[in-house]
Image 1 (cartoon, rainbow, N blue to C red):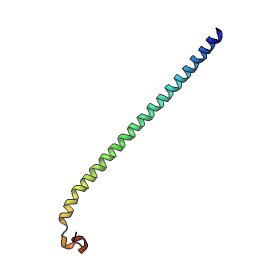
Image 2: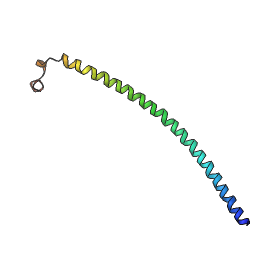
Image 3: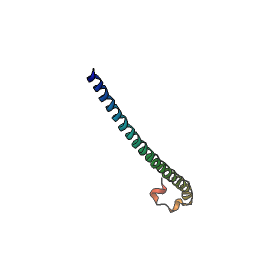
Image 4: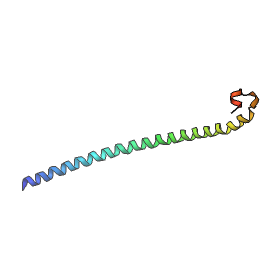
Length: 80
């Protein structure tokens, strides 16, 4: 009967060690996740800025096309 109690005690010790290891890993993963959230927010901000710049450039394109006189284009571009 004593060996059964010793085996049970060993298993409880293993479970306690595993629990501590998982808690440490969980804390590390939470920190990594927080860092990635902050990094993602930075990328989203940059993407929004780039999107706004592209939209501004696209708005300028029709204005540039209107300013170009077809007679000033080379013959190959004017034919298109």
